[in-house]
Amino acid sequence: MRNSTFFELLCYKTGANLRTEIARYHLNYLWWVLEPVLTMGVFYVIFDIMLNRGTEHFVAFLLTGLIWWNWFARSVQNAASSILNARTLMLQVDIRKAFFPLEVCLQDGFKQLFVTALLLVFLLIYPTPVTVTWLALPALMAVQFLLVLGVATLGAALVPFLPDLKFVIVTGVQLLFFGSGIFFRIEDVVLPEHRFIMYLNPVAGLIRNYREILINGAWPDWFYLAKVALFSLALCLFAFWLVRKLDRTYPWVCNQ
Image 1 (cartoon, rainbow, N blue to C red):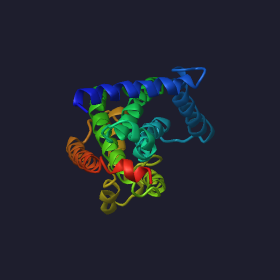
Image 2: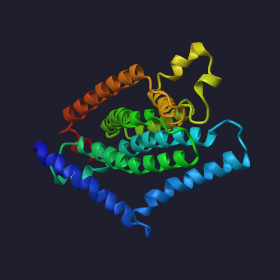
Image 3: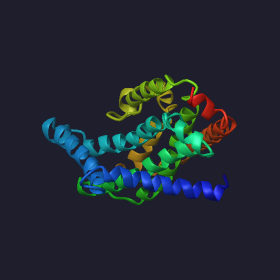
Image 4: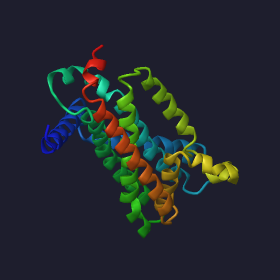
C-alpha cells in the first residue's frame, strides 16, 4: 500500500470511528464535553467543598495530573489488542499492521484536544494564573503523543503472540498510576535521593511539567522534555520496525 493511500485511509477510518462513537449517544458531540465536565465537577465537590483541602489550587493540581494520565492510560490500553482484534480484516485486506495502533492513538489524541480545551477553561474560572508559559503546552502534548504512540504500538506488536500480555499491560498501567504523582507532589513525599527513580517514569515527569506551565507559571524543564522526546522517538522507531518486520506473520498468528 502506498504511503498516500495509507494515510488517506487512516484519516478516513479515524474520522469514521469518531462519528460512529458519537452516533451511539443521543447527545452526540456534547458527550465529549459533558464527560470531562462531570469528572471535573465530581472532583471539585469532593476535594474542594466536602473535604475542604487547604492546598492552594488543589483541584486544579489534581485535574492537571488526572487528565494527562487518562490520555496515556486510555490509549495504551485501547491499542494493546488493536492488531489482534483486526484478525478478520487482515485476511480480507492487505494493510500494514501499524495502521491499527496508530488509528487508536490518533482517535484518542483527537478527543484529548476537547478535554484539554475544557481544562483550560476550568483553569481560567478556578482561577489559576494565566501566564505566557501556557504557550509551551503544544510542545508537551507533542512529546506525550510520541510517548503514547511508542508504548501503545509496542504493546500492540506483542499482544498477538502473548494474548495474556494485555492483562499485564492493564496491571502495569494501574501500578504506574500510583507512581506518577496524580494525587501528590513527588517532591513532598519522596526523599530527594529517591526522586530520580520516580522520574524514570516519563509520565510522572510530563505531569510535573504540565503543572509547572499551567499552574505555577514556570517554563518546563526543556532538557528533561528533550530526553523524553528522544526516548519516545526511539521507542516509536523500534515499535514500528518490529510491527513491519512481523507484518506478514500477524494474519497467521492472530487466526490460530
